[in-house]
Amino acid sequence: MPLTAIGGIRSRGGLKLAEFQVRAFLSLRQARKADGNLHAAVAIRHGLHFSLSVWDTPAAMKRYAASGAHLKTMTRAPAITTESEFHHFICERIPTWDDALREWLTNSALGAKTVNAEKIDLR
Image 1 (cartoon, helix red, strand yellow):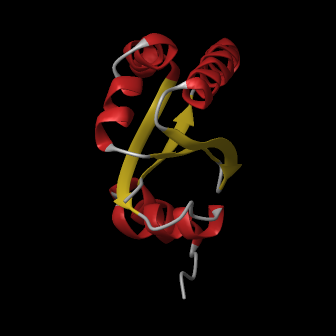
Image 2 (image 1 turned 180 degrees about the vertical axis):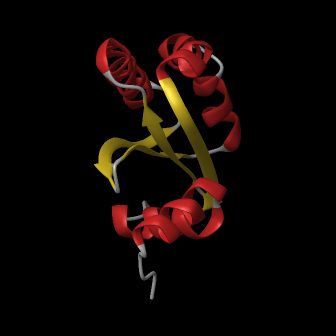
């Protein structure tokens, strides 16, 4: 069964935002070319930057996460973001953005904080 990873990230402003955007683009490009990747996309929702990727195996996702542009981005994350949280779940098919966001909002601490701050109705 495929594994989905969705992450919500709040970036710092100014030049840090520009660096974040470049690094996000490079990480997205890497994900789309990675062995085992079934889907990779980014979006801005609820004032947060989101990445959504689907992998054929957990091992494929781990290989991606521990290499290349993504690894370099993660080492810079404390300097270019104020908070971030990822949620992983098994899926039968590539989830829609709405389904993946609902999973993240329901199952992550930053998601719960976002729901409460924006009074989002998940029903």
